[in-house]
Structure formats: C-alpha cells, structure tokens
Length: 265
Image 1 (cartoon, rainbow, N blue to C red):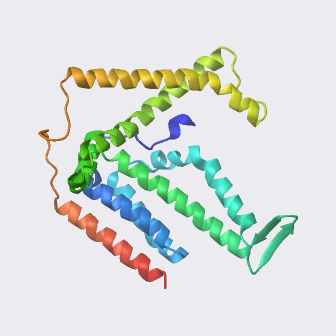
Image 2 (image 1 turned 90 degrees about the horizontal axis):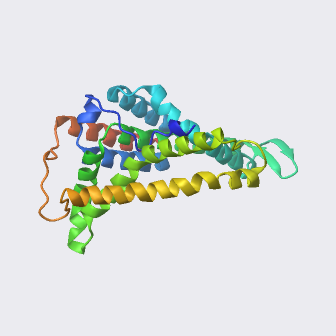
Image 3 (image 1 turned 180 degrees about the horizontal axis):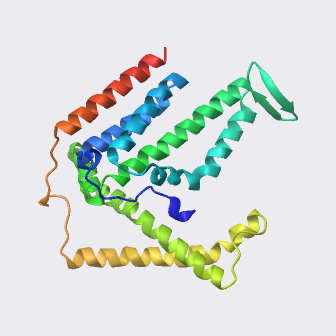
C-alpha cells in the first residue's frame, strides 16, 4: 500500500510531456485543478476525461502505474462519497433510516466529489512522474521570480518544495522497511481497534522521524561540502526554453477551459 503512492516519484522518459518546459507543465497542472472546480456537470467531466487520457497516452506513463496511486487514498475517497450521500438533502429520497438519507442530489454530489478527487490525484501524479526534481525546482523558481521584488526568496522556496517532493518516495521506502522490521519482531499493525492501531504506530514514527532528521542533516552537509549557494549569481547547466510543444499544450489547455466554462450553461 505504501509503495503505491506515486506523488513525488519521477519516471525518466522521452515523450512530449517529458520534454515540455516545466513552467508550462506547472501552469497547466494549476489550470487543470481550477477547471476541476469550475465544472458543475458530467458533460464537463467528459472533456476532462478525454484531456486526461490523451495526456497519459502522450506521456507514455503506464496507466496501471498512475491508477495505483489512487489506492492509498481509496478510503478517503470512499469516506468523502459516503458523507456526501448521507448528509446532502434532495428532492427525491431513495432510502431513509434514522439519520441516513440517500437522495438524488446526494448521489449526484458524491459522484462529483469522487471524480474530482480522482482527477486531482492523477493530475498531480502525472506532473511529478514526467518532471525531474531539478526541472521542477527551476520551473517553480522561474514562476516565483517576479515576486523577488517583494523580497520573496524564490529559489530557497522552490528548493524546499522540490526537496519535500523528492523525499516522499524515500520516506515511504523507509516506512516500509521499518514496518517490516517491526513485524519481524512480532509487531501487529492490523488487529485491534483504532486506538490500539494508533499506539502500534509509535514504534514506526519514532525511528522514522530520527531517520528523516538524519537524512536532512546529511543533505545539508553534502550541499555545504559542494559549496552550494542559491539565489543571486547561481547559473544553470540547462536553460529553460519554451518550444512549439509547449504552445500546442497551452492551446489545448485553453480549449479545455473554454469548453468547461461553456458546459456550465
């Protein structure tokens, strides 16, 4: 289950999506998330589904690899759907028993929330799977550079965000290794009530925090040993450049926004 989380992982490739400018991919991802909240009917989600499938096919990322990132959040999605079903009043009641009331609007809203969460997970996963941490850092820094006039540390902020994403898979692997070591010593993380399960997580959280701080210290020492310095005066081996592929992707995304707004009626 832990290894199914795909956010923060990067799969090298030679597709058009991999070659896109990271700034454009970040902006497209941001617009994509906005569109998910703009759409208010299933017609709009047809366009979003088509856009998402085309993006996955062009990126050449296996669909199973992207979909498995939904598994760790499956219970959250189900919980959100159940809450919307039983707590949303509607005109037509299909089932009622006590405080549990299933209506047409509840089912409609639950379906919307499930689709929204699933597409959010797929969109963010696709961004990190096709963008290397270095490109992601450069893209975020470039997008935040206009705020430097307000003394915003654009480079430092971009570096922290990218390092946090980069270490998600590392910490997940570390968590899996600690869990297996504790289970080999007789630890039980599956039986018992919710409180007992929470208590059983303490032998995992303590060494995990220690390992995370240790890795952070090692990273800081490694950066200092290489005389790393960010901000002003820092040069890049690879300069960001917007190409024809980026313009085409931007035009397609703009078309998605237009049809999504029109579909609202």
